[in-house]
Image: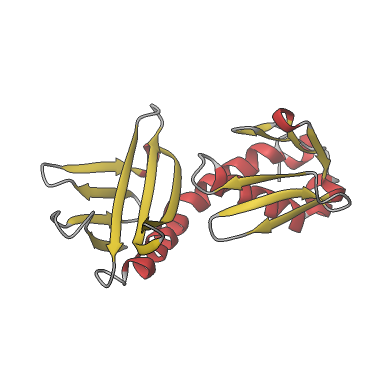
Length: 204
């Protein structure tokens, strides 16, 4: 469980974000919003520098939550100059909680659907038994030639034989965390996952 006091700016009141294995609560100041695990279908996140005239003033952190009915809500908090320097550490603690309690299970659900032979679509990226397709970029990369590079704010799926054939997916896109995890899992266990007939995998 994690409980975090967050502030959008020095001129705003603090809001409390509580993350448990079954529910996420956020105190807006007017009411407490509640998100039950059963209704959460995706989470995305991003952080970026706050600058003015080329000078670094701080960082902005944002978490977005999507419900099954497609409604969304975001949590935003910022650090300015020497104020709230601990927010970077808190941001990654929040992400760890979200991963452990929510995103890990969402990724597992997608993995089971893939094992059952289903083609999965994450925005512009299509995951098939043959490999990764990105129709908008004309990419079709087989699993045997696929490489995955993960950075702090994005990841890259590319052809290991032709690195210029690639797609960059930022973690502030819906489905990005689950997609990155799914691709990594398939690559790590390619022998057991890809060589087993779908009708058999569905029973595993």
